Image 1 (cartoon, protein in one colour):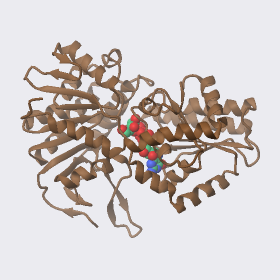
Image 2 (spheres, rainbow, N blue to C red):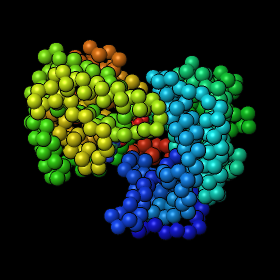
Image 3 (cartoon, rainbow, N blue to C red):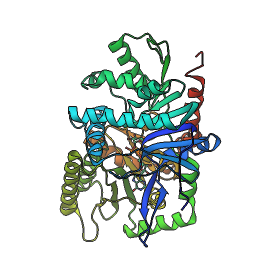
Image 4 (cartoon, rainbow, N blue to C red):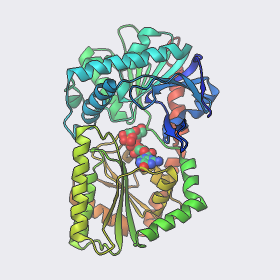
Amino acid sequence: SAARRGASRRASFVVVANRLPVDRVENPDGSQEWRTSPGGLVTAFEPVMRTHRGAWVGWPGSPDDDVEPFVHNDLQLEPVHLSADDVELYYEGFSNGTLWPLYHDVVAPPAYHRDWWDRYVTVNERFAEAAARVADDGGQVWIQDYQLQLVPQLLRQLRPDLKIGFFLHIPFPPTELFQQLPWRSQILQGLLGADLVGFQLPGGAQNFVRLVRQRFSYETRRDRIRTPDGRTVVARAYPIAIDSSSMHDLAMSEETAARAQEIREDLGNPTTIFLGVDRLDYTKGLPERIRAFGELVADGAVDPADAVFLQVATPSRERVEQYRILRDDIDRLVGRINGDTGLLGRPPIIYLHNSYPREEMAAMYRAADVMVVTPLRDGMNLVAKEYVACRDGDNGALVLSEFTGAAKELRQAYLVNPHDIDGLKSTMLAAAGDSSRNKARRMRIMRRHVFDHDIDHWAGQFLDDLGKLGPGSDY
Ligand code: GDG
């Protein structure tokens, strides 16, 4: 394997994230190896990792597993140990049972438990110590996401020489909601340890600055905050993107074209394929969209002999109570609709609770006539951008919730309020029935945006700004 064990060397660029960008896989002969996990972040950091001496600090993905630092595909990996208790309290508990619902507009009720919080602090300390060990003098450290909001401050205490950046992948909530958090001041102080705090949307950055001003009376000017120790913290939006050209190339390959054709045939060659692709998460608006489609079939507006809804729901956070409830709700809903309105061999909804290789996802995007993305709240939503990147000709339509970050960029999508079932129904019909000319025009504009603002552009913008800030700068 490409892995090399041994003592870590110091790195001038360090990414800190809950998970390492690798998964342990078992070979048929029982041996194990690491494989780079699919997903954008690794790709985003690859160029920087290569030009700098890069390292990645994160959890290897299984509890109670002691992994030594190792090198995989030229990437230096620094594992952070999590016990089964850590996973339960810090990850499933505080991160996914408190912060995730709170930051997504409390679409599910957040739970506040002091033992979850205590463990969140302990684990954040562990990540900060690992980053402090590996970062070279004056290096740059980029911390990722809601699981690690205390790391900026903890790391600054250990290593005041570093330039520290933080990026939040999920929404930063309105101030009224954030104030519910019993540990609101600690979280804000944690983030203020960074030189640059990045958000998906300007609104999130503004919420953060306003909270800091209200709670601590720090001096703020637009996107800048002065801290009492004389530092400047900048809070700004960096809408995340995808590796558009590699996604496009994958979708345009002959293999993908053939597979897309096969998928259409397997689905009975309907005129219209509606597609949904989501982690099975209560923020994604799955029941709303399924209910709306079910009503269209029941009303006779959509003929199951002629249209199908393909829903891929990737298993997610299955040990968290709310996720189990959601899964049962969706099972019941899909079963009811297919039972009530399906024809022999033609269930209106094909529901797949599974995850697929990138190639298969690209083929589904290519096969789909209408992509339906209806989260109740979503920081960005990469699926919407991936669909756009996978289109070529003049067909294809994107139905997109107003409550996604992506809706601020993809203005030519068929925008919709996912709480409004009638609105969902009419928008899905409008998208399916629009003229090729309109669809082509909308798609062309969105495609240009997705290609001009790709993942390299995203990482470049953030790191350029970070380079200008921090210790030794007079920004
Ligand atoms: C968080 C924020 C923000 C899904 N199923 C499979 C699969 N996927 C891939 C998609 C896409 C990614 O997972 C999902 O990204 P999203 O952005 O849609 O949603 P979250 O997982 O909630 O991500 C979100 C994002 O972070 C980045 O900042 O946009 O707002 O919530 O890339 O394609 N990929 C494969 N098989 C699957 O079955 N290979």
